[in-house]
Image (cartoon, rainbow, N blue to C red; front, side):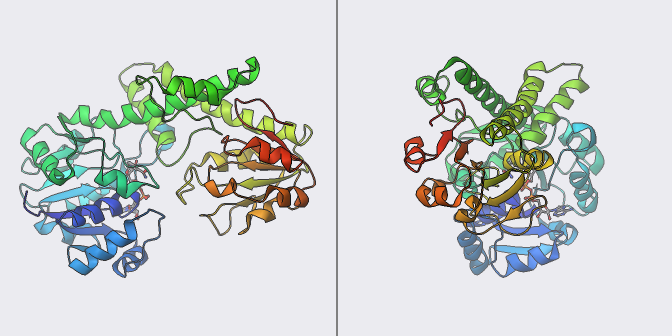
Length: 428
Ligand code: NAD
């Protein structure tokens, strides 16, 4: 396909990656945001989010003239052939997806978007949103296409340029195929679907992953009660190709900017058609139970009562490789610990600044200072390489709770500390 004139609305994880990558593929891309300061920074080549390869792609796009950043979608879309909506769809009141930004942008551009231009939702939106957008537009010469995004934070560029699949769905099949062709250079399978199916793929996939994690956390709990080792159990499970090895690691609960809101939204969608999605609601409940079990484990590690205890936290981001704190399970655990009276000091290699309820430090060894327990909450590799003898010298207590099963227990024992993971035998 020849280069297309593309507008991307929203320059967050998804929008910026989409814009920079599509420019890299040769398209002419205008990225739009409402945040003027962000647009100014991006226009100067400054990228705030931690995504390998993204800064370089943005710089290359700016230098080549194929990528630009502007404020305001209305002017930007006037000669576009494709407009990608990459704006937030957070959890709204009651748990459904909040579509107000999607709708606001649709209203903003609805009467100036040129005939034939595809209006594409890359934001995660519930089934029926394409139809709703089409009705809001009040015109049929602008095809609405669902093109859900599956990139993972921390590997966004790699995922965008090497996707497992591309899903495009519209009740206008030709428009869906045309959008699929924008990615022709990526050599990924393209699933061309109707709008409802494409919209559902994203939720079905994310909720499946959430359920897989809740399942693994439940099996980890069983391991603790039965004296089995989750690492061995999941190793044995993961060789089964029907199951696969990914998303088989227990942890402090799943989180991040997508899984909590998407699971909640799908439950609400199911309710809207009188389906009681108990499998999914159980996975959500199990996730809260997992957080509480982790808190109980930490309480046990400091002698049973958290009030007045000093806890050092290693990791705040929702997973390693990102500085995203949205719905981070580390923060969820920290918030309960704080509410129960623990004094918290935290370090994360990608997170600085102030966070309510804790002292954030810029040196991992500071979290150990006078700590009754040190808790690993995010699976940053650098925590494995800490000098645990020095950590032990700093600590008042001797407990390490490793909610990611990240550390080598023997190293912790050698430092004179005790180690507790998740679903594994305690090492003391
Ligand atoms: P984000 O919060 O990182 O970025 C959203 C951007 O949109 C921000 O820069 C914001 O300033 C901008 N914005 C808000 N209102 C706007 C408006 N009216 N006009 C123009 N710009 C506006 O969000 P994100 O993480 O990139 O997520 C965007 C969508 O993609 C969501 O629906 C999300 O569920 C979905 N998604 C996210 C991921 C992920 O890993 N983050 C992966 C797949 C899908």
